[in-house]
Image 1: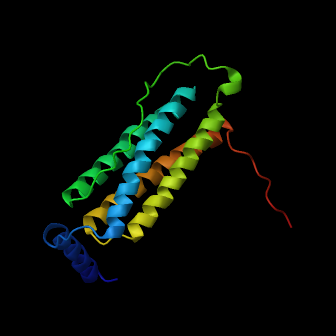
Image 2: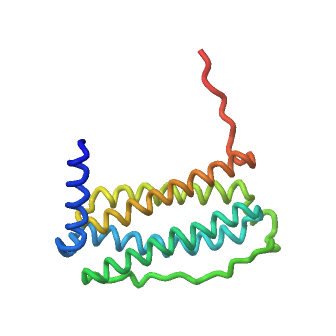
Image 3: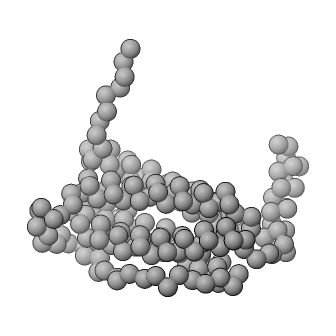
Length: 179
């Protein structure tokens, strides 16, 4: 792609964001609705996982997932859905206190930090796949850009979680196949 083509593409994108406003299509609205509903559940699950975690860096990553990723995505999705006349899911869950210190959970009912990290990582990867699928169904530039920005931020977060898991030995070391 030449520089002129790139400039034309960016200009077209900016023009569409401001002037070519159309209502969300059914797939976009359904995706936003699903993101909101799943995000609300994810908040409840992440709060519980935060309270099981004992490692301070893991707690910090979970709190970031709650505040900067999940809640931000929900807020943007609700705004876009409301601006297009869509209904917001009524689904809600109990809020939990985020405890900074270890709780007295019996060992047989308590997740280890490695188990918490794997659960949080699995949730993150599922969220990334859902956002990618929603991005592929997006027509509106502002919706697609929101998904792309959240995907970029999520990939950075996933990388930091993976590094922590490697550093702490929470991932199994798989032997390489040798011929």
